[in-house]
Image 1 (tube, rainbow, N blue to C red):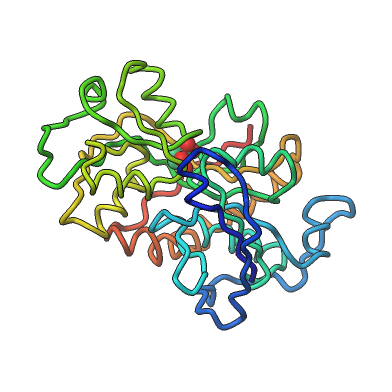
Image 2 (image 1 turned 30 degrees about the horizontal axis):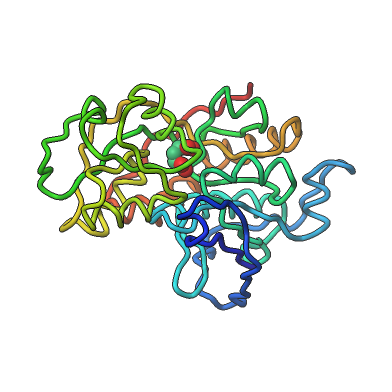
Length: 296
Ligand code: GLU
């Protein structure tokens, strides 16, 4: 398994890029993949992305490295989370074992460019499907539906109740994300700080440099679960964020294949097991009903 990181220091000053920091976590790095089956006799039509990936025996996946419950890199350099498990399920259906996945940290702003320039084969990274993004990438899914929410300091000292507070408080979100877009569109005069990663917003909230962090409820819930002394969730989502698997624009066969795999995982319990082992465990919530795949 190979892992490539985005540099938070560069991210913080707004430079989006990769550095050549790679590591090989080896075969015994504790990857919780025992339950993800690997197809042993997968066959695909020649010339398809599936055939190419199966033949190569590896797939490059863009995911988050700083979001507990969805995509978080462990101290042993092993990515963990619901998105990571979903990616393993898809890789498994291609005949690719979890150890043969190459993980590339994809922050919110570089998901589209990474798909456009072939840096990754797919993105599984709390990635909202929307029409604007569909102009330049395609999406399988959704495999989960989140909603934008707000995290504040424990005790909610400024009595934030919902997005209307964005006009009066210092709010933090992430460049290239739909929650940042929501604030910019609806509260153009808001005091908005943009970082490359949500963990930097959480840190800024903890240090009283901002009053609130806004993004999807499931991302914030995991930050609160990890540090309830510092953080609190408002818990009143005000948008719908259907999470999709990003694939290069126009690769309809690959998109359709992933949709088949997702639907099978909804049916056979592997999707729910992935939830229970990751985001569900951290936030102590049962797996919801899986959403309906949108084969647009
Ligand atoms: N789901 C939203 C998005 O895709 C917010 C989470 C994120 O930035 O990853 O923009």
